[in-house]
Image 1 (cartoon, rainbow, N blue to C red):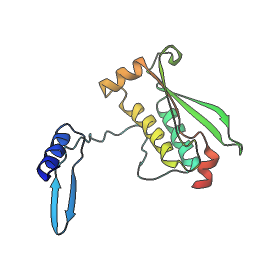
Image 2 (image 1 turned 45 degrees about the vertical axis):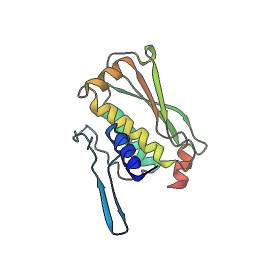
Image 3 (image 1 turned 120 degrees about the vertical axis):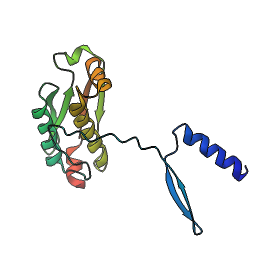
Length: 165
């Protein structure tokens, strides 16, 4: 494939939104490819959580409990069991106010099944935080919660998380 064909294919992919922007320096030459920024404004929620670090199992549990307390109209918190070392395994059930979560299709999201899979818990925590803070602000998310329930288990393996952090 010629360099021109390669460039054309890359540009076609970029136009379809499949290739992010990048800066590449090779042999003293710099190539800059612009990217469309799709970030959204930061709207504060009722619970402030920094997503720039990993939390240990106690901090993670505290954040989940804080979200459930701050958004009681959306979140029902259940302890579905305990780990071998006695740590709680929590599930946050998120559903639109006044709607029975058992009467709708559901999505299950869990994290930290294996002890060293730390980042998955932060993804579940972020999902819980985002669903809560954007309900009533984001029309698409609001509709989603009106027709779908979310079951979020941030850490299936809190003992493994404790070991690795």
